Length: 260
Length: 334
Image 1 (cartoon, each protein chain N blue to C red):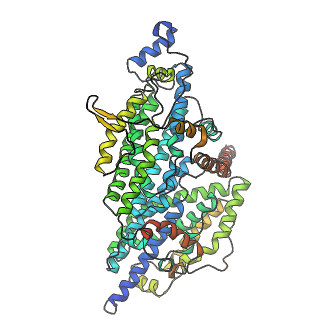
Image 2: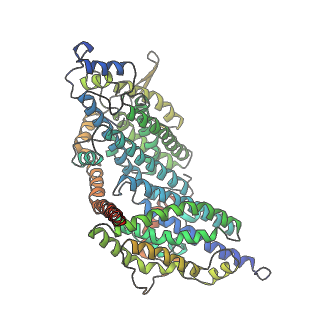
Image 3: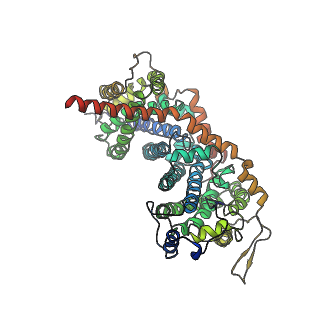
């Protein structure tokens, strides 16, 4: 019961940080997925990927919109998306990984979806009504994302020798970027304590279960848990993010103050 | 017009008296405005012409994803990005309905892809032009989708049922596309001088290629006459082009833009605009593969297909394994 002791400015800053984290994950992954547009291996996949990207961009508008509201400095979702530099972005490193082949894109999506699904499911019960409302909407979309990415990971894992080895290689490469999803800092602890968000590590058993089931069914081998990359959540990114932003923010940066 | 210069194999259009009874019955049904459905008898030329036209139309939709997709990652706001994504997704959906409509005529989607990738099948000339600025995304919606609607509205009354029905759905979405394009430009012309200049530049580059979308004059074309007799085509290319110019020029004026045609003039007598002749040499060059982006567009489609082979094979292999396991389980249970 953290009530009287809460410093409103600190709570506001923590909330903003959390909203930037979840919003930036959706934004950057939505951007990556949208890079496939017109280049997918089947027409149905082009449609499904555009749909996924569209959901993620829609969620970005809601999360970053609320972030701007919480911050109360007059910044809109667009201002946050288009006018921050890399060190101010809070997405996990996994979502900025380059697309690679279609298998890697799907594996990244699956590892993320399994976590995103559990996170949103927990956020539906957030003590902050605004967060619970967004989570309610996003959860429906992400349940579908997870169904789809899990299904494809299983089929391709248990497909041909080539599809199997591609999926295994993607899994091996991306595994070291999954640990960041469950890392926690003082801000997480504070918000979890207030019942606003779930403690990040509390999502791990559920994620392990979803992932293990799919990998077994897809005849894929779970990599050993070694070193896990980290940094995105506090603004320390890989070199990839700078190029994503250079592309994404081009018009807003080249024509300051113009409306579109 | 997403299908240009579709051949019919006809040397000339036959009269009813020259037809065998079966063909005559078919033609009379078409003349009465009845729809022809997949399992019904149809002349081989009708079937082949439809396959050419519908597949060309489908190819245009999927190649058409590329010039617009080029700006999804650079869309200037989250809302614009979402709208553009939804639009390009619609185009892929249109491709899907159209491939399905063509499949009812006895050709597979893989065969149609093969024809596209080998260069045998064409797609609309317009998608071989580059999208150089954000204003091009507006111009494509306004002009290219506008021209497509001109052609597709009458196609809703096409004699072939599956094509006509696909077109009903497509037309609804295309009018949303056109509005979003015009809306992008409206916003920009009310913006900074640089934004206005960008819009004028886009119109300068897209105007003539848009007029070329209708194809050269086909008043003397036996293929067009045959397509019209079959009610696959309802209007001549020149008629549609005139209609497009008459509709579009006032919209350009409303945006405060100058249409890049010194011969453009209102003709009171005909109640329409007089306008200059597009550069047909350029058009034939683009059709022949010499447009600014022909090589990139086709390479992108081929690459998507070739790189995706392992993915499609993987899914097929899994489906076979799963079917085998179900069969084995059934035997074990018996």
